[in-house]
Amino acid sequence: MTCVADMLRWIARTLMIVMMVAVGSTVLVRFAPGYLSDAREMDSRYGNTTRVELAAEAARSASLAQMLSAEFGGWTRGNFGISRQYDVPVLELIAPRLAVTGGLLLRSIAFAWSLALCAALVSSAGRNPSLSWQAPSTLLLAVPTAAMATLCILSDCGGPTLVMTLVVAARDFKFLDRMLRNAWRDPHLLQARAQGLSTLRLVYAHILPSVAPRLLALATLSIVNALSALVPVEVVFSVPGLGQLAWNAAMNRDLPVLLGVTMIMAVAVTFAGMNPDRAGEWQGA
Image 1 (spheres, rainbow, N blue to C red):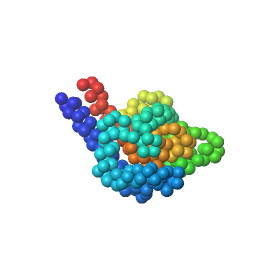
Image 2 (tube, helix red, strand yellow):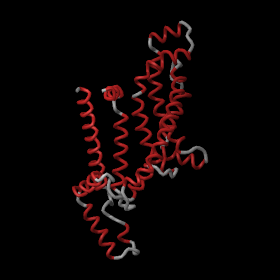
Image 3 (cartoon, rainbow, N blue to C red):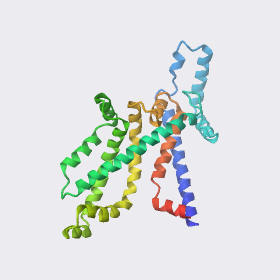
Image 4 (tube, rainbow, N blue to C red):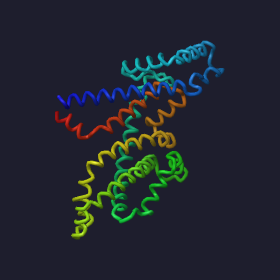
């Protein structure tokens, strides 16, 4: 019963977070400068009847309550509403792009974990933090993601996976380096090193098992970092994923599409932050 109650509380909290994100995003879009304006109203190619319809649409969008009602109505129908820009169900736009973005995120996070973990193992084994290891990650953190992607295009070297990997690895390295540096200072590790155990044996038999539970917290950090870099990377490299779709929706004030993508990202971060021990208890129950 305790596991069921905890699961219900977690579901309720997740739904509350999703609702807050939906309401907050709608408020921000509604009161953004120029939301009620439509460049099509000044386009001579549109007739008077079309312009009247556009004006009526803008008038309906002036009410925040009507906007929220329309968006939640689209969710209840299961298609996330109708895209303002493409005039098709939002789900039809999101579904094919979800696989593209998911593959990019999985590859980037896997490569970033491997790169950051290997670099942190070497860096943390020294007595003091080495500038040769700390400087590259600091430099990568200082360079904007869009600028890094632009440099890759101008130099004709690398792609979206490389940029995402470097962005995520630079942040993960800071986390891993501090954690592994503390692990190397544990008394039993100092005694094992004094007894002459090899570094490879120490890493596999002592370091990795001791930090494995804390590595699970890195999953949330990696996913959040990858999602934060998703939009500029997909826009600069013209990747047909959710990030590019969200950018086009923001530029064209397409609220249903923007909310649909935002909800997916919010749910992904919520699931990533779920307690792994509690998830295992629910599965066992």
